[in-house]
Amino acid sequence: MAPEESAEAARLLPSFERRFLAARTLRSFPWKSLEEKLRDSSGPELLLNILRKTVKHPLCVKHPPSLKYARCFLSELIRKPSGDSVTLSESTAIVSHGTTGLVTWDAALYLAEWAIENPAAFAHRIVLELGSGAGLTGLAICKTCCPSTYIFSDCHTCVLEQLRGNILLNGLSLEPDTTDPARHPGHNTYNSESPRVMVAHLDWDVVTAPELAAFQPDVIIAADVLYCPETVLSLIRVLQRLSACLKKQQAPEAYIAFTIRNPETCQLFTSELGQAGIPWEAVPHHNQKLFPYEEHSDMKILKLML
Ligand SMILES: C[S@@+](CC[C@H](N)C(=O)[O-])C[C@H]1O[C@@H](n2cnc3c(N)ncnc32)[C@H](O)[C@@H]1O
Image (cartoon, rainbow, N blue to C red):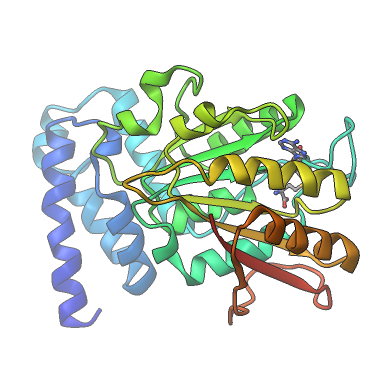
């Protein structure tokens, strides 16, 4: 470890020590900083030092915390070296239970890669994802881009059920209910390094402008939601309602990723954006390919200025 790295890592140790000895809630630990350090420094040595300052601390050995607390802490710590991965339960069929949302589509992977290269677009912001499906893009953003709140959404009951399972599978905790206004992002009183994560039942065809405004989104994202003319038109309608969600006089921005399977469908989207008065620009391709997807498929991300 370089001396400056080791000094930075050493600064993390007292934080873990103090919180652990005071049996503070696990979400108050600086997990995000630890993940960053594990990425650029010598992981095993740092983890060993954290163990010495926590479960193996002489005070703790003499007066141990509850077994449950120590076990939860260790599970969280063990998860960190592999914090770069996303684990998903998915269907093996492209369409099942009448939905396309139970598998991960290439545009979700492509958008996740772009996000990982551009974390500033999401950092400390409230992100609302439309048509989340299995949840890959959102999970990657939650793990790497430090959003303050991430709201996954979809309209399909089976998709939402699978999505909740995938969020928990990745060690994120889930807000219990998004329909209660007191739990909406504007009422965020948490001071935690991990994002608040919610799952909302949100159907573009029925959701109202006030319901959307209650989420107070700064950024909207969606992947692979332009697969037929009907969904394009539904999406345009919900984007128009979102453009009225001003926050500090500013409308949210949106990133829509898609695979160009049928050029007419994409043209329909851009011409409908024009008619709705929503300016857009194509986002330049990112550099790094991190996920396995069809090499030759033509994918795009549009940034919309709602
Ligand atoms: C092709 S899947 C994409 C899922 C995910 N974003 C991905 O790229 O892997 C389309 C998703 O949009 C959702 N969807 C379609 N129409 C919708 C609507 N009117 N309201 C909300 N979600 C919708 C579907 O349930 C499905 O999960």
